[in-house]
Image (cartoon, rainbow, N blue to C red; front, side, top):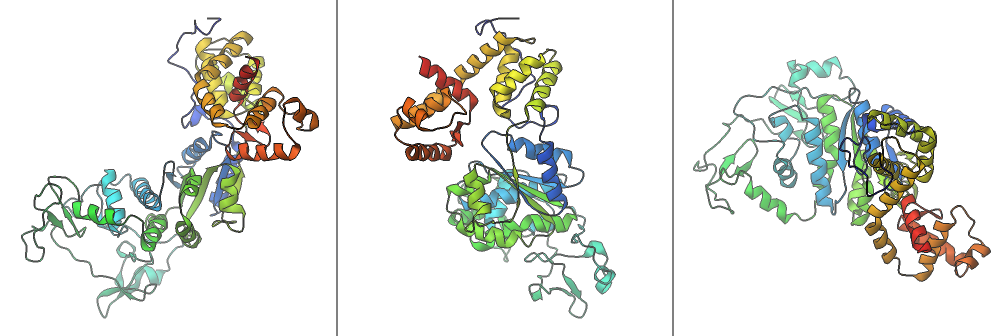
Length: 490
C-alpha cells in the first residue's frame, strides 16, 4: 500500500469504470427509473429519460435492454454527432435492420423490399452488415400484425399464413384477388406489383439492361435485378446508387417517412414488441429539424407495435421537445427524471466493487466518497477508480490523495471551462458558490464576492445553467468545485 500519489501502483484489474456504458455487476441502483421505463413499455406507451450530463442515461438504456431482452426486442439508436436529417434517417434505417435481423445471414428479398430509397439502401449496404443474397431460394417470412388475424384473413384465397404478403408502401396485409391472380392493397387502393422470379445475376450485355460503366473504376457493371441496382465487382459496391444518394443532400418527406415507419413494419413482420431507444436525442436541437420532428410526431403516434424511449440531457431538451406547446412531441412520452444516486445505494456499491477486486473499503470511507461526489455516478466511479489504484484498503488519507489525483487529471478540462468564462463577474460567482455551496445568494453573498445585484446574479445563474456548468445555483461537477477552491486559495 502507498500513502502518496507518486507511489501509487497501477492496477489493471480495477473494478471501477467511468466514461463507458456499464451493465450487470458494474451497474447499481436505478430500480425506480428502470421500473418506470418498463411499465411504460409494457403498457405500449413511450417514455423520455432526462437528466444532467453523465448521470448514466446510456447505461440505464443498456441495462433495460439486457434485463428484458426475452420480453422485447430493443433497437438502440445513438444520435451523438448526428448533424442533419439525412444522417438521422440513414442511422435509424441501418440500426433497425441490423438489430432486427442480426440472426439472418442473408438479406432476403422480403427485407430488401422494406427499404425503397437509394439513400437508405446505400446506408444498409455500406454498413457491411448485409451483403448480396445468395442464389439459393429463401424461405418466406410470416408477416402479421400484433393483433391476431381472423381465420378468414388467414385463409382468404386459399392462402396459408406463411404466404401472406405485406404492402411495401403502407405496411398493411395484401388481399389475394383470385379473379385477377394478383394481390390488392385496400390501404393504397391499388394492386401490388407482381413478383418476378428472374435469375439472380443478369449480364449487362443483355438487351433489356444496357451496358453501364462504373464511374469510379470504369469496369462494366452487373445489373442485380432483384435489387434493381447496378453492382461493381471491382469496387464491391453500388456506385450508381451512391451517386443518386449524394444528390439527395436532404432527405425528402418520403424518405423520412420510410425510415420512421421501418420499426413498425419490422414489428409487424416479426410479430414482436419492438422498443426503439433514441440516445442523445437532444442532438436534434443542433440542426434545422422542423420537418423531421413534424413528420416524426405524425408517424410515430400511428405505431401500435413499437414503443419509444427518448433520452437526452438538460431541461432545455425536455422543454423544447416534450413540455411546451411549441414542442413537436408535447405529451408524447412519459417523463422519467434521473438524478444523483441515493447515498446508501452508492456506498454499498462501492464496498461491493472493492470486494470484487480483492480489496476492502470501510463503510465510513464509502460514505465519505459518496458525499464528496454528491451521489453523481460518473464522478463517483472516477474517484473510486483513482482510489483503488492508490490502495485496495484505503483510509482517509488515500481518499484525499485520490481526490487530488482526479482533479489533477481533469485540470486541462477545468482550465478550458474557466477560460471560456469571459466575464469577471461570472468568475467571481463561480468561486463564490464553490467556496460556499448551499448558501443563499443574498445581499451578504453578493457583497462578499463583489457582485452587482440579485437580478444580475440571476442572469449569471441562467447563463451558466444553460451551459450545464451549474444547476439551480450549484456546480454540477463536484471535482470542478475542488479545482475552483484550489484556484481561490492559490
